[in-house]
Amino acid sequence: MSEKNREGKRTARERMLAQRAADEASGRRRKKLVVGGSVLAVIAAAAVVGVVVQNQRSKPETPAAAPAGTVGDKNLVIPVGSANAPSVLTVYEDPRCPACGMFEREFSSTIDQLEDQGKIYTNAHIVSFIDRALPGKGSKNGANALACAQHAGHFRDFHDVLYRNQPDETNDAFGDKAVLLNLAKQVNGLDTPAFEACVKDNGFGGWVSAVQQDFDKSSYKSTPTVLLNGQPIYPKNGNEEITPANLAKWVDAANQGKQLGTPGSNGQTPAPTSAASEANNPSPNAG
Image (cartoon, rainbow, N blue to C red; front, side, top):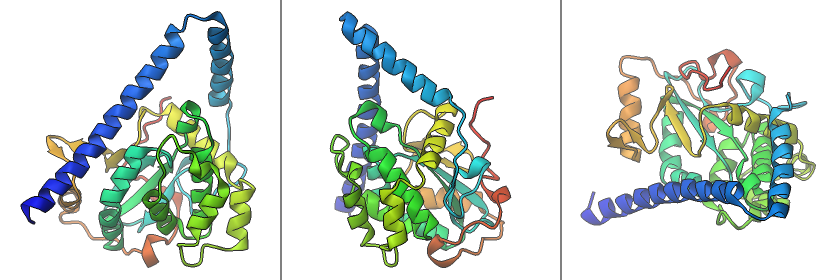
């Protein structure tokens, strides 16, 4: 690889890490503003909103419907790849998360290849918390559209298209369902009346809420959160920075001496049972 290419990769990673740091700093600033506000009307309004959010988080919810092929407790996980692959890659992402977009644009082709080689079984948790901090519905509508794509058997392709076309975090383009439906036209076989109805009618809205509640109860507080066999690898695995080459190296090391899985077409074959889901990935949920 040329020095110019190496520098380009470094720059992309630095932007990804800087964006994540900026997101976390922004979240801390927002929290300080709410806590430190001095105007009584603002405090009162914030208190009311806080009660509503807390009630929403505390309300037990089992989704009435889950996308076909989902796995795990309450079928909250979207699997991609072969369920008998020797390693599990777990990814928590929000459709509006800019750091997730940067991660996917750099790593999606590598992850897709590892899935197709039967080396990893990816477990995707599609969360939607950014709508709480910024105006709009892009996180929830985007998550629902991804669930609809999973139900139609086209999750991976639509997921990759969505992140390649991700707007700025403050631009709620994904809140417009017409935008999501237009992007679906880039995925062969996804642009159907059934998919359109699922997106327009918020067909898996309850499932989206349940996935977010599961994330709220976990020990993970930011996106992307990326784990390999239960161990965090983003932005670093030990002292090594995550790069496409390092990710492939870490997977090969974890799989040494193990039989590879048999992936389905384009990584989209649903897992036959939920038992295989995250078998090597302990649940982060409290209680």
